[in-house]
Image (cartoon, rainbow, N blue to C red):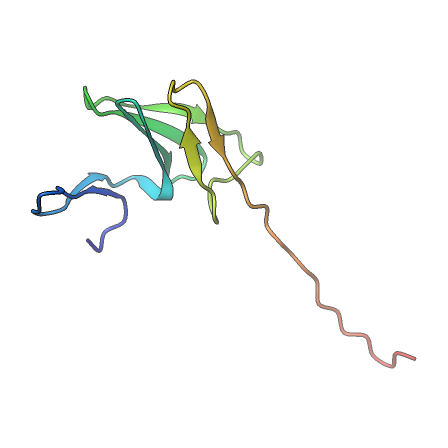
Length: 102
């Protein structure tokens, strides 16, 4: 399993199968008969209905609002009415050189 995405592995043994190649790493949650996942574009959450195989975009975030990356995790309530995610804001710092400081 060297390819990125969400994989399925039978409990009884057997070969792994790539289910969602477009799913971002760590960005998925199971709820009911659905898999909610952050798309690799990092700006949208998609749903795969496991009973029908239907995939659809659930929400797309506008540019500049959030980015589903760097430590983001995703969870969905059992009734599939609420999605929660954590977002890590970029941490920046400036390094300055002060010469002849007294």
